[in-house]
Image 1 (cartoon, rainbow, N blue to C red):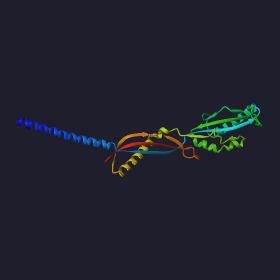
Image 2 (image 1 turned 135 degrees about the vertical axis):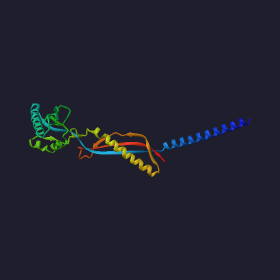
Image 3 (image 1 turned 120 degrees about the vertical axis):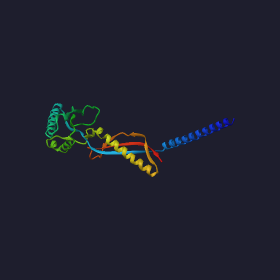
Length: 237
């Protein structure tokens, strides 16, 4: 009977000790879960200025008259002068395209009360698409040479704006993503230091869309590339 009591007491002590250890582990686990719920969300911005590497330049001229044959002959002369101007300044055939002329019959609307001195208004467009951005910019400034030859170049038409593009985004993406991530980490570390915490591992991360915009309205051939990364970090005591 005495041995039975001793065994019973020993079993009780072992069970109590087990419950104590279990409780300790549970508290540690709860503490760990609590710590892992402390997070900070930060955003890291990366911006970079790049030069456009592709330009599309529409050279627009117009002809008006009453006889289409005469107008088309004039257009051929105009195109010949434009092509000569471009090629003599280093633009290749592969960079030039001549669009079909757009003809408007000003007298076609029989309900119009406007009297026009000419029946036909024809728009002629020669398009330069090139990676020689600086060269094309120089030629745009030299358009007056065409005016001296009697070719009236139409400027300011919203339908025919010179456009610039940057097509090498993939080459700068990795560096910009790394830069945005580093900037986000610095912001998170500053927050952790200010709150007497330590910065833990990344919980989640998301990368925003890359955007490419003109730096300003005066230099559309210089682009600003931008990306924002959003990162959630754990905080530790």
